Image 1 (tube, helix red, strand yellow):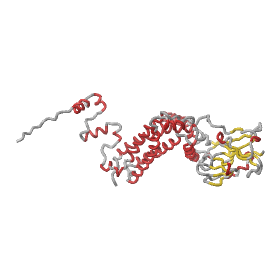
Image 2 (cartoon, rainbow over the protein chains, first blue to last red; image 1 turned 90 degrees about the vertical axis):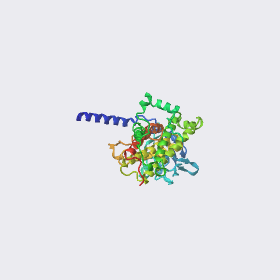
Image 3 (cartoon, one colour; image 1 turned 60 degrees about the horizontal axis):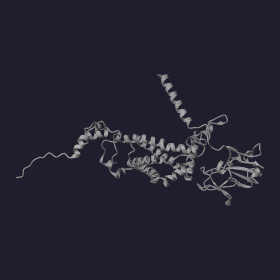
Image 4 (cartoon, rainbow over the protein chains, first blue to last red; image 1 turned 180 degrees about the vertical axis):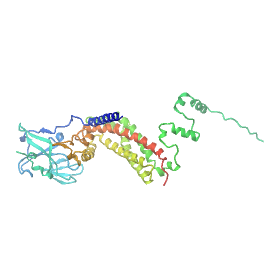
Amino acid sequence: MGLAWGAFSAASAAALAATGRFMFPNVLNEPPQQFKIGLPGEYGMGVDERFKDKFGIWIIRTPDDMAQHAAGFYILVSTCTHLGCTPNYLSAESKFKCPCHGSGFRLTGINFEGPAPRPLERARVVLADDGQILVDKGKHYQFELGQWIDPEAFLKV
Amino acid sequence: MAETKTIAPQEGMSVRFWNWLTETQVWKSVFRHDRPNTDRNRVLVMLSNVFLHLHPVRIRKSGVKLRYTWCMGGLSFFLFLVLTFTGLLLMFYYRPTLEYAYTDIVGLREHVPLGIMREMHRWGAHAMVITVWLHMFRVFMTGSYKPPREFNWSVGVIMLVLTLLLSFTGYLLPWDQLAIWAITVGTNMARATPFLGHEGPGAALLKLGDIPLVHAADDARFALLGGTFVGEGALLRFYVLHCVGFPLAIAVLMAVHFWRVRKDGGISGPM
């Protein structure tokens, strides 16, 4: 009797676990987390939106970064830190403005208006072997944790 | 002096047809009771029908008073039936894919005769959320949640959650900007699930060496969305839950709910 119930329980638990695992596919049809965005020379100063739709990032080239005090590139993840909508870049006002609840961010990513509790996050950016800029969205850097001074949070050019 | 005489009433055509019909084998195989002209037969009508037996055999006079019940439970059920029927019709046209979802919704209005069906489904859904709330409000204000009805109240709370989940999953299906961002914001809450959400309390403790066991691609939010953001996986999952999963669950609970009203002594009396 004990063996029968034990076997039945084990089989039921295994079936339940298999059902749960079924909900987590091994392959995702989503954009890659790491991608090359071209050579540094292809970008001028300021905000570039060419990969916003595809990868959800802004590429910003600056002559003097507030965190690294150098010239180069940083990548802002275009996810509002309030509730996760995608802000718009308003070039006339030099800011990112979220349409959902009105959060505003400076071009550095620092929040200055609306409900967003913290700055936008930056993504890892390095130079690939072929000289192209490599962006890695798998690694984020948060200003409020002091992570923007990380060498891979900024690409010095 | 007038002569009094009792004359047997002439049986009309319809009565004779009725008498013949109720004697046929087909009729008798379906209905196992006589006409409901006595108390006993009325009870048998209720007890020998799978749908009617969910209901009380008899209820208090106060139980059918509109000013007491507001009929909100009945209206909620009626709206559920309307939503099931109109939803079924919408399924003939709607395809839950990134390519077609939005255009199919527009097409439902522009290209389909009686395109009002989609609006009926939408407004019916809003109305059902309202009637369910008002039903609970009435039950609360009349103290009908008290023993012996506390179990049925709990079943009702679960059905309230299912009603809201049906509303929430249906919100995504038009696949417009409102839908996508509302679901993005809504499902971001699941990130903070204790232990099961990758930004939730305790999730950081679950790791093998340097490898986190709970991350963006295997947490509670992922299970909801079938992806790490609101995309094609989320649309399909919400569609399946909206059309099959949640309606099935709420239908089963409704049967329990109605049956339990009967078992707990019918509709509660005035306080």
